[in-house]
Structures are given as structure tokens and as C-alpha cells.
Length: 110
Length: 114
Image (tube, each protein chain N blue to C red):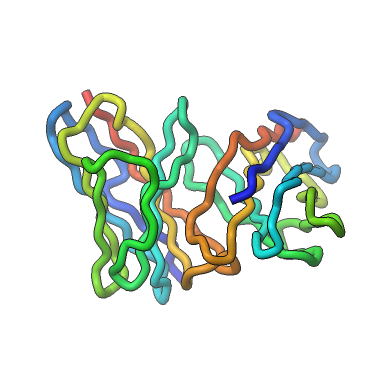
């Protein structure tokens, strides 16, 4: 599975968009990009995933570059409850497992 | 629809004992995976089951084992507990195999070994 690189921490103001970057320069054609978040001591929460196209759901948007070597998770209107560690993961189509890195600790400021 | 449930939520055991943790997946989900989370190592994959078969195993000693039942419920067992086994053990379920099926995590079982 390809490795990902994320900034260790970020912050944004409440109500503003939070843009979390992720580099996955060694991603293969059959690997999906997944985003999860984890609030302290709780189980990771699924946010969104995609293969090639940009994706949007009720929680967030996922923007994947055309060469698929990087992606950005966008939380359009961050709230204090969005403060968490966000994990970007690439996962092979044939693989069940998720390989978690260190993630980005997002702090949403009032 | 009910989420992934794990029991017990908290557990305290003594070094040398064994422990069994239980996971009930979301209804209709046939794939169950287990992860260990510690402050030092982060989230690490333990093993995964699909249709009662272990399909993949992480880099953990043989003291860690698991199984899946015909109703997709899963258990993991840790024998001869060591202090380093203290961790949050997370179970995740998904509809099926493959990268296009998202995994949903349970709240975890917090195991403390003394």
C-alpha cells in the first residue's frame, strides 16, 4: 500500500473552510484514497473516499489531483466538533486493511 | 441501523492472563477487521475476516488470534498478556472486501494490563 504524508497539525477558525492536504506520490492505479478522523479515544469515523474523481458527501469534499499524487479534504464550515486527528489512507482495491499514518491534528478555534 | 458494537468497553487484566474481546458488525456486513491502537505505535492492523475465513494478518505474535462466526460476529483473543498489550482494540466492519467498501469502526475496548 502506498504511503501518505500529512502535516502534523493545522488549525482554522470556526465557520471557515478547513483544507487538509495529503501527499501520496506512489499511489497505484487501483488504490483508493480514504479519509477518517478520530476524536480522542473514540473509534475512527469514516469521512469519505475516492478513486479518481472528486467526491462530496454531507460531511466533506475530497479533491484528488489529476495525477492522483495528492488530495485535499475540505470541511466547508468547520465547527468546534471537527477538532480531531484526520487520517489520509490509500488502500488497494484487493486489500481489506487500512494502514494508518500519524495523521493531521486539526484544531478548530472559536 | 445500529453501528458496530464492541464488548466489553473496558477491561483490566493481570499479566499472564488471557482475554477475549467481542465485536458485532453492522447488520449485513460480512467483513470484520481488528486494529490495535497505542500511544507509541498508533493504529495498527491485526487481522481481518470475511465469511469466517481469516484473509489477512498483521505483524503481531501468535498470542493474538481471532475468529469469525457464521453470523459475522467476531472475537479476538490475546493469551499470556503482557504489559505492552495495554491498548485500545478497535473492530471495524464493512459490506465486503475490496477498496471500495468503507470500514466502520466501533467504539473500541480499552484493555489495561497490570
